[in-house]
Length: 198
Ligand code: SAM
Image (cartoon, rainbow, N blue to C red; front, side):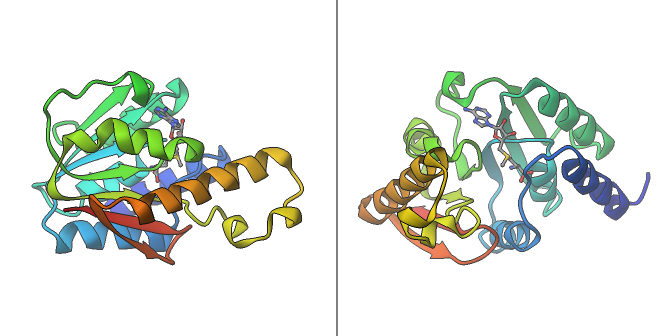
């Protein structure tokens, strides 16, 4: 088998060339360390892109399984290819669909990683929290949105971006006010939250 590090490098290069947003280095380190430290085994990921974070999470420990959802066909096909290269087909289940159409029944997860459309975070949270065990975690990436969330609204030129920033701020307030979870915010990657289900 080709060196794993070289294969990871190839995935990152592909992401770079094709403008596919994948987790930043310190963000993925935070997530994989968290999985290891909290003995997480069953992960649900919303937003596979080309499989980078799913593969990194699965590589943490042979007991980790990941179910991951992607709605973009080209990215889904690339993810499928990457997962095969790592021979992780038996531990990573890739679902090609819009997450809002996915029904997971009573399947349980220890951690849900939300990394899809930033404006929809509350909807993703509420759609899948029923599949999270008590004591489990919901992790969300991109809460800083490249530093834009900390800026004053007037400083943001584009109306669309202002709207997106407002939605991220709403999500942050939603997490802070949600008494069913204890949420901590981390200044790593593009801003990460970890919500622990009480
Ligand atoms: N987690 C990936 C990683 O770090 O390697 C990066 C995911 S990328 C930031 C977000 C992905 O979510 C995009 O590929 C996008 O197509 C997908 N996405 C956005 N909304 C979605 C939805 N409603 N259902 C499924 N996938 C969605």
